Image (cartoon, rainbow, N blue to C red):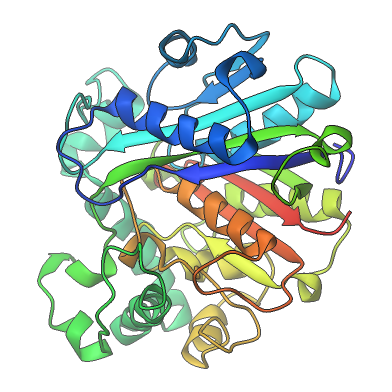
Length: 379
């Protein structure tokens, strides 16, 4: 992709976030979509491309009255929306469409019109992991985490520190689900979920969603909001079974996706002003910092403990409060993208002064997939 050839011109989350017992999944998609269209000054008839995960793009287009010339139903877990951004940019550059709407909506907490979590017994996971008790995210992610902790000397306190710092960011965000300060002791004294994860090391379970609208950079200047340009993108997948990762200490999908995005953007790590790393659990920012190349293997715990990612640090990270304190309806990637866009627009609740480049990095499944999008507000 040619850097800065495509821009985000519309971005919004659902009107409400957290607990929304009176809105279905498709309703959340629509709410976010209409909010994003209002943000961009568009109506459904102006949209000719749709992308979504969790529901079918066919359902989305019909529900909103859109007749697209481009549709993307890529669904690889929480980072699906990073891949949608990448695919939409390619489609716009290829002339397949002009204006793409990407939506997310989940009734993760209230379960209004939500599907189940079951895995088919015939699937690889159903055959080779589930019979041994590896059945849910906390029991899946513990497999690589325990090896990673042993290899790099990572302690429970290190994992707790991730949650503490993200809560500090959340305290500055009026829309965050949890804003009260917490300490390392608070995290370590919270209920055990699955060793080594305590409750406050695990993501929230909420209702909500968000939507983005992309168009060519050439057209972007005609929209009401400040354009946020796509500088670089990457994606990759590794394995549907966490037990079959190439290396429990590192995500191959993270490394491939991140490198592709940085190479495409033509930037160095020192150029990055703001970072979003999907944090369904407290270990993910550690893996992300290392696999994206911001620090060397084993150094992420010290980097965070020294408050480099905290308020006033040299690499502000997860400034909305993250999946641990802001929102996590199931597929968190959209919320990370939204915060990157807000930071680039200069409208974030905890705005990083002078930020010009933001990296938004997502995970799908248990290190199964990854997507990376690099944004800039400079043309």
